[in-house]
Image (tube, rainbow, N blue to C red; front, side, top):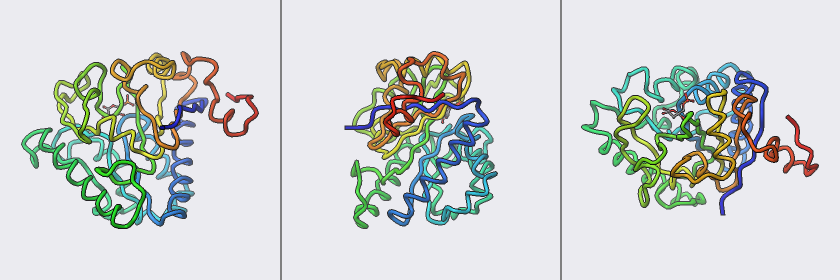
Length: 276
Ligand SMILES: O=C1O[C@H](COP(=O)(O)O)[C@@H](O)[C@H](O)[C@H]1O
């Protein structure tokens, strides 16, 4: 049974990015204390990359042993390897290059030019995930899904249409079953060709954090948290095993059902007296 969503509202997108960064550093330190290494699944998008920039700017980042963090991605735009619209290119520029992470720990999706099409890149990523899962299993790491390594933290952005990763409303990807990775064609957001984890794969994560800012996302956030179905509102379907945390700014919170505002604080201190 995966975790019900909790919500934490921040005054603006800058403070939100800083808060996601601080949480990420803290959680990575805690996970490394528990099991030596940690695995994070990155997202693209405004907040996803903004949070990585905020980690780069934070002095606290040196508390993490970055040589023992594995980075995967929730989705990628199927473009040439050095294209500036690739989520991995943006993540490298925002943080990974500065941390000098070993390429062995940075698990990017295959690029156009290296693979004939997005479906081949999806098959390749699923194979690499399976290999990582087999290594975890051999090291007796507890897995939620035998096809996937342990994902300690999985970050998601949310589009104005409520898409997560490259799973768009009413499209085949959000309905995919029995696969961990899919090729996407006809994405309504450019570029049209993409590669994405499926909802099944996303929901294997221990913790899912959805980081969302801006008035244009308020409708998507409101619907997702009001209990819409995932086919119409993909963000509604994201549920981590231990935690599903919505980290949002005031603007994105403007259509949130009132009972959910500050639900993280309310549930954690037991006061029932949420903060804003
Ligand atoms: O295309 C994508 O969009 C989403 C959300 O992006 P945003 O700029 O609206 O925040 C992102 O999460 C996803 O990884 C990306 O490929």
